[in-house]
Length: 193
Image (cartoon, rainbow, N blue to C red):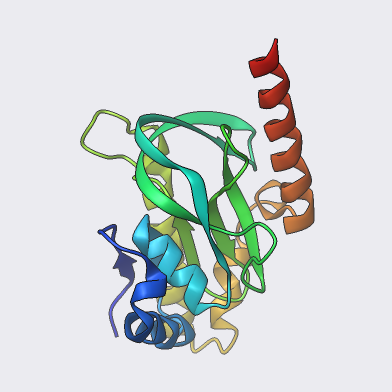
């Protein structure tokens, strides 16, 4: 099998491509490490049972602020989309890792039972924003853990990479939603001042 699968960005919505979402579900259930970017993020979340919402104001441009919840660090990202994963209908076993500071929407997920992560923006793109290139390092780590598990004959597989992350990177989804709402509320207060 491949070392990993990258679900790239592209035009459209995962709701318009149910056949592709069904294939993504098969890939995810195979245990091969997956990274989803932009449309790939939406496809993976849909495949794993997550709900999508149409954003009132889409995220467009190279100046969208996102917060990485495990470290509370803010990054500026490049985005061009009109849908997001619903914070009220996250895929089972998924934790929010990034939130958009403008509207509090989900910008990234980490899956506990699958070797998978995804983000709604373009990490380390060609526009000079390379701060989130560490996401590719996390994906590489997933592939290494998967390869080591296969070589040792481990039956645990999928959860090995998740257990190898620090406790700070494994915050419960409910905690992330509270923090996202808090960030959203503070942003609204600052805008009104």
